[in-house]
Length: 613
Ligand code: F6R
Image: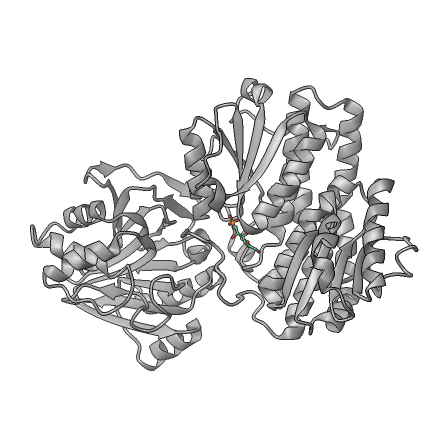
């Protein structure tokens, strides 16, 4: 959601900015723009739509010089249009700003600034920022940092900012409050960016800006300040991901590459957190062993796909531990009057670590004394910095907007954490642990097997992609997978899809079933009782002539007579089957989207990192 890039150095900024914006495309956007400062002259280019349109404008009419700032905008205030695209300037055209976040009190600030004679051209909240800085500069024309700090103290909301000022042509200013921003530390050049993949080809060292920090970058120097104007010592960290990790590696899309990376990612997590694959070795020291023994309640909080991972986590924690577990959406928990106390462990799940609702819920829980464990994919992210302990999913950069490998890594992280916690609390016998680990070790190979069936899955998708809607049914551990399968389908193929607990079908959705409705039934072998219940649901769909697509266990002949199409998957314990079954549904969604001709890596209206509420 909105991407920011900035460059100061000896090269022309325009190509560096365009390259950075390309790498940020995955975050989701509807327009793009850049500003280059050459001598004291500010040149701005903006285009609505894909980045290629901005690239074309820049190629026809290139701008030379440095520094520069660029932005991909995901509209919040005002429609996607050139006038609403960033960078925005103050009325005099001397200060250019790119912004990610929302200035909540922009209307009152705008009214005040208009009374001061400032003129607004866009509908955005962002435009108040350059004008507010210009107003504060009236007090002291030479102290930009002072003006910036005073301006920011008047703004309420979230921001990551990149700023150019025509009177200081060798500098970029930056600031952060609640939206992600990093500084890339180069040799004779420096960068700002929304995330590491945007500058992964240019730097090996970064500074993660904290909330309430401002920075001034020159080609050969970086200075950090807090909002009071006090200088801070930068904490420079090494980048841990490699440039190749952010490439398609020969696959037609990032999403397909990421689907195929899942066996490696899950194998890596398993090896990292098991010793000799016989015992569990999850490091819980960040939470404290005594605290872990005393936890009386777990509240899982997350959004979207990560919420479905949380639903899975709840089931597994309940299965392995004698503990109360709840799961809640970040956007709901932040406004609930839920009872939260120090005995409640919060588990926050997030690929990006920047999801505004999840972070807000975490802050609220921390204020009530809760400890926070995050299951997160991005080192240095805001969530990681808010947490007492982190279980990294180590999935590498996930560029496809629809989450795949990060999801299965979250499921594996839940499995490892639950086993580790149950072990520490003395709630898991040696025998049960060995049984669980033996099953878990099957997961990467089983996913390989599902991937090897992709041509068969493509044929099924080709048959069913054209309907207006699809229903996904699952029970217990595979209920979150039905929800996730439906979400994947809607996100990338734009076919309406709903996930339901199969037992709920007769309480409403059964009315939808007809020979036109594809119904994806996850009916892999579980304990006999649940399998039988699921098969009854399949029969109910069959009786109403629904088009059944079954995800079934290899060798299950009973399904054959009922389902028009079957995706066979290898047998594994029910509690770990979601990691395998979901891959079949990812591929089903993928090939449906391909058949429907959508932009799979960058589905319309979606943002990879949802940094605003
Ligand atoms: C779906 C998807 C989103 C995210 C959600 C939370 O494919 O990617 O639903 O799961 O926006 O994002 P994170 O995990 O970054 O907190």
